[in-house]
Amino acid sequence: MRVKRNIVDMRERLAKKGRPEIEFAVPGLTFIRDTDAEAEKYVERITGGSHDVLDQTLDTGLVGSPETVAQKIKHLESIGVNHVLLQLSPTLRELRGVMRVLSLLAQIGPGHP
Image (tube, rainbow, N blue to C red; front, side, top):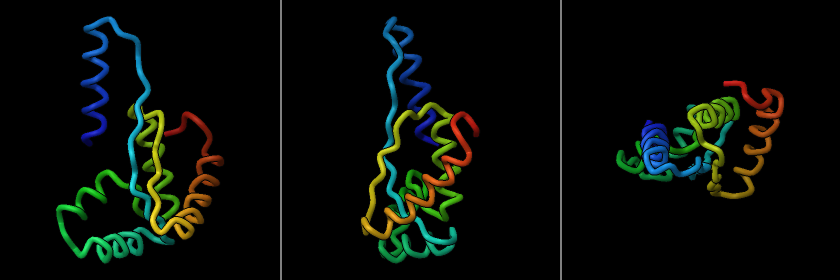
């Protein structure tokens, strides 16, 4: 994952310069549906099936069921990401999905992979 490589690289460069740690944030296109297949189908439809856009969205975005998106957020946390900037469209529908993800994350608790 490109995000992890970037974090490792930045930490190494900061350490070489004797600079303090910084926090890391990543943007995440967020498309939450009841199932992973529904979310991926939706993303494919809105990207027109363009593989460049589709691959990048699926790689860096939070696409899937509430459970999958919660796992992706926990993974980002485990590799050193401090903040995830959710990009929502359509906003109201995605906010409902985000509420489901937040509920799952609250149940998992901090520090669990």
